[in-house]
Length: 103
Image 1: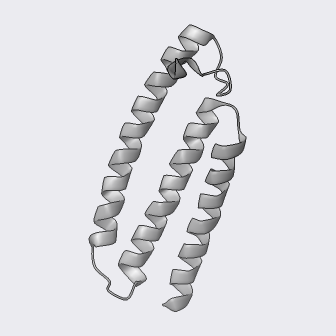
Image 2: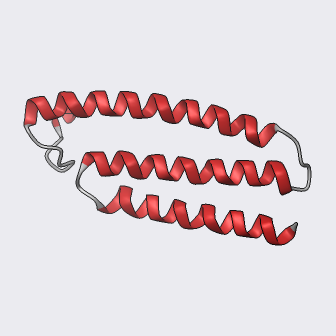
Image 3: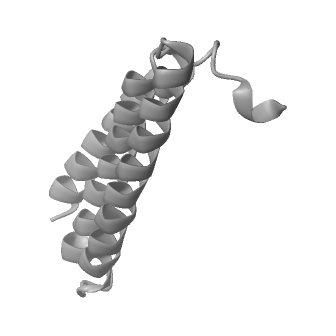
């Protein structure tokens, strides 16, 4: 059991690091949104792994994972809507050029 929990946590950590690298280093807004989704999915893997193999195995991790998926879907919808509006105004998906909301 301990080996399986460690494998899931390692997978979650690797996916989270890949998502963090993509969110911080890429300039394309679509890639940044996908990287944030990858980080949220890594957290979901950890929630489900602790729900199954943790010291107090219960359904709370799976319930948190469902709430996290709901939040991720709402974040993707709102983020893409904002991205489409900014693309219509600016003509680019580069996050460096999108500073209209500062003014």
